[in-house]
Amino acid sequence: MVMDKASNLKNQFLIAMPCMNDPNFDHTVTLICQQSHTMGAFGITINRPADFNLGDLFEQLNISTNSTNLAEIPVFLGGPVQPEQGFVVHDTKKVWESTLSITDELALTSSRDILTDIAKGEGPEHFLLALGCAGWSSGQLEKEIQENIWLTSPATQEILFETPYKKRWHGAANILGIDLNLLSNIAGHA
Image 1 (cartoon, helix red, strand yellow):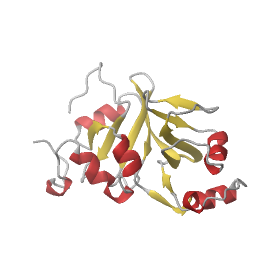
Image 2 (cartoon, rainbow, N blue to C red):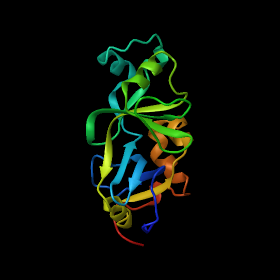
Image 3 (cartoon, rainbow, N blue to C red):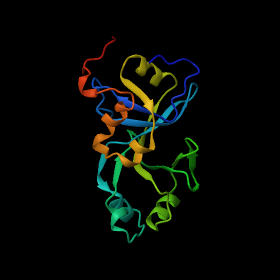
Image 4 (spheres, one colour):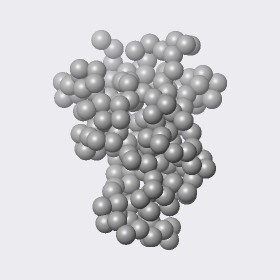
């Protein structure tokens, strides 16, 4: 896919090609939350679980919840940048202190107040919590796409919130009608 100056990757999935040699992004799907030609791009990887869950995070942050269902929700590794910062991708029924709109139906919040509301059962209906994010300097991501390191597809709430994380890589590519099992793990051009 050739990117021109008018292209915007916001609300797109970046799907790592099988030839991805960066261990931070091997077999990942990343939601692009912001992108501009002057500032670069910012996203959250949505299919790489951490080795702890939401209950563990609540305990570490001294946030109490009575919901065992919430406690078992996985936390994801959102990317190698700011790994200590939490980001919640969610539907937009409510706005919190640090909410960034991605679309009319999707937002990203990085303030603690959303976690408190989630613990009380007053949070968004659908959400995904990640620690860290992914970032690209101006032009870097567009260059990587031209080098066939990434596929892009429209982001869907079904992949974000309903598809099991182990199936998101293939599911995001299926939006394009692509079977990743049939692609070479060697970078190149057709």
